[in-house]
Image (cartoon, rainbow, N blue to C red):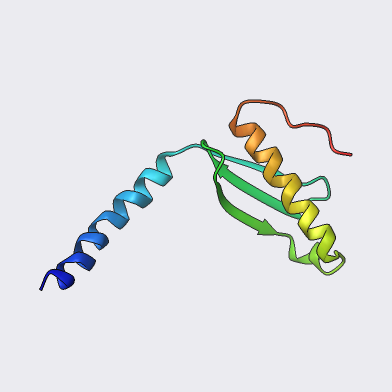
Length: 88
């Protein structure tokens, strides 16, 4: 019987968790080619990644990886209150 109660308790916590996340500030940044946009919360945790499908067709796997890193770093720097470092 206890096992049946656990999912219900977990389900009750889920809306609170979503509400707490929605109250947090979110910082967004794109890479310099606008291929990727990353959103992080005020702790710098990645909460969303979006890829520009039109540009993705022209990108290599390396381009995509570099774009994700660049956008994530820029968003995390915004969350820390520092200006983004210049890109190479």
